[in-house]
Amino acid sequence: MSRVFNFSAGPACLPEEVLRQAAEEMLDWHGSGQSVMEMSHRGKEFISIAQQAEADLRDLLGIPAHYKVLFLQGGASLQFEMVPINLLRGKPIADYVNTGEWSKKAIKAAKNFCHVKVVASSEDKNFTYVPDVATWQLTAGAAYVHYTANETIGGVEFDFIPETGDVPLVCDMSSNILSRPIDVAKFGLIYAGAQKNIGPAGLTIVIVREDLVGQAQPKPPAMLDYKTHVDAESMYNTPPTYAIYIAGLVFQWLKRQGGVAAIEAKNVAKAQMLYDYLDSTDFYRNPVEKRFRSRMNVPFTLADPALDEEFLKGAKARGLVQLKGHRSVGGMRASIYNAMPIEGVAALIDYMKDFERQKG
Ligand SMILES: *Cc1c(COP(=O)(O)O)cnc(C)c1O
Image (cartoon, rainbow, N blue to C red; front, side, top):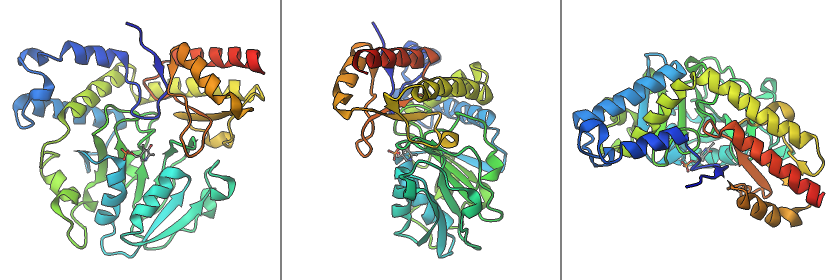
């Protein structure tokens, strides 16, 4: 068996230790005689798995007691809609920051529910930076302020948490949750699809401040109401049980790595290595303003796009896969989430150097 270094933006690579443990436990979880996949979500075995996963996530992020943690389905894309449905609370305006493709999707979805005010945008420079917070035109009395902490496609990441006073701050953290410590208390709501930095697709995590739950006007359909899922502790209907189990294993793996601060140090080292190399040559290029370069998703272009196909083919032959950039921007993208070992980044840089030597 040989495993590749998988640079996919999502679904993305998982820690090998976690996959081995899941394989080990596949047929008989802890003497239950069943796979987790086969368990009733209401049985004591699975309930214990879900409770442990929540407890570990709370530990890792230091989630205060007055925040609820939900394990939902529907991806971050459903949150683009559940957020306005639940958090407008009768207010007509929501503020959005536009820093790229995922912000744009969130904005488009919200427009069906309210007046969206784009309070800041980096579209003028092709989404290569985060607008200075001093220039944001925040609306007094807005229902909430929404931003995307890491633009997975553009490779732009906030290096700060904006202050929004009494207006709840809402954040799409799909592609950088658990990659760095955050102060959860600064947010009204955080959401993240699991398939980037947590676990398998099919699970979406929502962390929401208690007082924001149950305030929706008008009352939404049950499945779209956070209150339904809070009251039922994410078991209103069948949750994505296996994805929750794997996420739980990833949380335990993260704790064994020393927690979020320790993984952040590794993420900084990995990203620095790759950006330092990119900056040392004219053969490759990353367009993002240095301060806002993503530690998770590193897009880059080759000086001659005619070499793209050959680059990808040569990479694949060395076991470096999923480097093709998003179809909307082209070029390459290396996603280097928590689970990507530093050896993977080193192998990528070695290959890039060799390719440059041959073609540069
Ligand atoms: C991948 C991604 C999404 C979309 O997630 P789905 O689970 O496919 O709906 C939204 N926002 C960000 C930042 C993403 O990276």
